Amino acid sequence: MKARRAGPRLHALEVPLEGMSLLIPSASVAEVVNLSTLTAVPFSEPWLLGVIGWRTLAVPVVSFEALLGAPTPGGRAGGKILIFYPMSGRKDWEFYGVLATAEPRPQALDGSQPPVPEAGLPNSSYIASGLKIDNRSMFIPDLVALQKAFYP
Image (tube, rainbow, N blue to C red):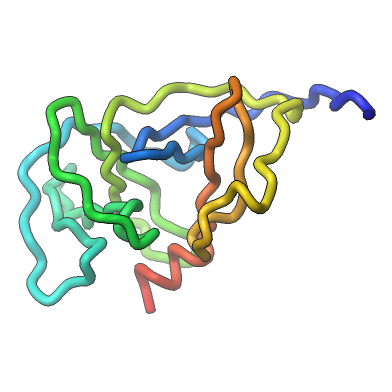
């Protein structure tokens, strides 16, 4: 088997969720904030947990677990909300948040991390792929699928 060659480093964040971790580019996150009171949105999708006030904006917060069909995790001490920059083609003020169960951890990727086999990926259109880091599977979200879910 050919050894993988290390390439340029990509700075990513491991986002702990209930029962799994996401792996996202750190440049896609505007800020990580403490879990605060969410204001419910009537008649919203089950994965939309509510909105928080952030820098004079009402930012929707989603549960990635609920998007995958799992139960929505309850709020817990130490939970964080990752505020993401607006998706491609959206207005400058259309930030969104994802609930994490704990503080995200930095991960430096250099191309030497093996991919998660397709059989090891969750069966969801919201997961594009995954990487094995320290013998743990971390899943990479499909931002195009998320954009379609958030902005039908």
